[in-house]
Length: 341
Ligand code: SP5
Ligand code: ZN
Image 1: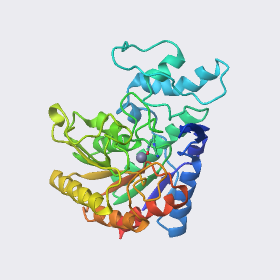
Image 2: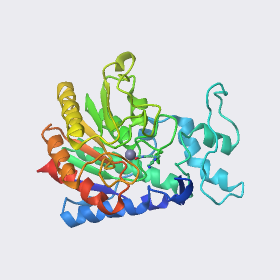
Image 3: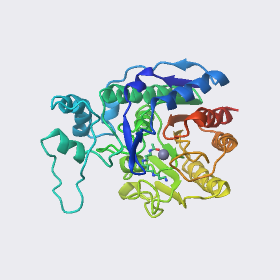
Image 4: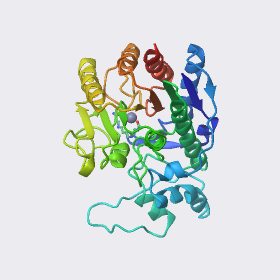
């Protein structure tokens, strides 16, 4: 399959993240994409293509206009205050505080952020704009009749909701791709999230819709990030009731438990009979991931791809998490090559 990729991703490079009481290099780093690209080339997965520009309209189809405008101007406004370090929020609009957008860039950063691990840097806007184009170009490949396409993007996207960033994510690339497929002939799209962390942003975007079935297999939020969403009783609302399916699994779950959930998810997808599948392909369910607690081996990612291939659906794969940098390429490309074979 074709891989869509832009080098502009490396312009988003946060310096540090608070981890175990100290500031450490951000887990979500440019080397992640380099490792995946190396593996795509080494395995001969297929052509590596640059994205084509799509403008902001497909981004605005899933994200709030005020949020997008904030992301576009945040770094310049931050820098104008003499700040040359990563923009990170230091407070949140917790219970009983006002639900109003502050004027100051610092207040707006707090308003539009879910956590303090998602830095806005000088190149963030360029990287996330290119990332959206990568996801859209991969969706275009499906629209053009391809059976599979890989959006090799970073930063990831699935924690980004309609109007907030978090979990290293700003634009929800998978949601943007799914919406683009809908706008170009797909009547129904299934979006399966296999990242270790619940795809709260994607759930948020499609929660009231019955045309995009969202399913997520993830560490149980009672103990795992993002803590405040991803429980099994979140089933969608209004027209979307029954079209949101969470499979929270206890941290430390076995590989068998994980694949049982995948089998159930595949059953739901088959029953939904979508025209296309979008996969939020995080590979942090890997046994060696530094911030996650599932046990999949690199061979298990082959098995994952094989199972997804048996759905017989055209699929766009969007890279999400995965922080064991050395094997991230093997794990991600294992899914893709097994899907194709
Ligand atoms: C896209 C994606 O995978 N985002 C993940 C964001 C996770 N951020 C917070 C992680 C907190 C992890 N705490 C780990 C404790 C391990 N001892
Ligand atoms: Zn993750």
